[in-house]
Image 1 (spheres, rainbow, N blue to C red):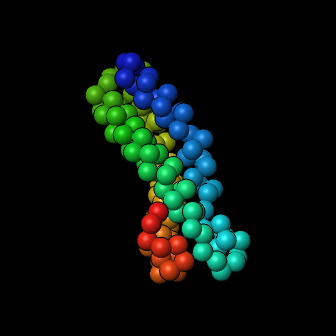
Image 2: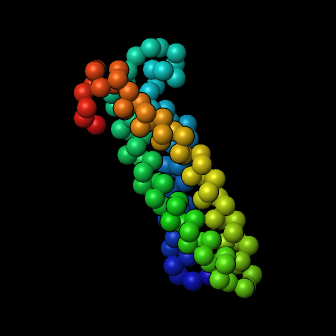
Image 3: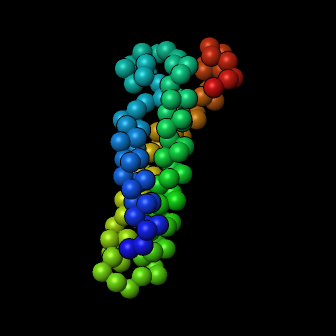
Length: 117
């Protein structure tokens, strides 16, 4: 395991609380409570955390998948495990991110909150 893998692994671990928060965070807290109202700041709050997380975990997935392919030592399957964890977190974060984009682009959101983020 080289220094680059250690640094990237540390960054991935530091982003874990943000990723777990994104899994439970909703772009429209009113809609999740059953109220038909528009949340103006909900989609922005989700996206401000989701986009860096998707970038970090996407980069980590490629780095550790490449390390899995290139190495022939005892760390090989650890790299595969980390890459699969990154893929899992990306698939858990993506639906909430897409819902935030669709919530921001909805007609009701544009009427109440305007076109700005």
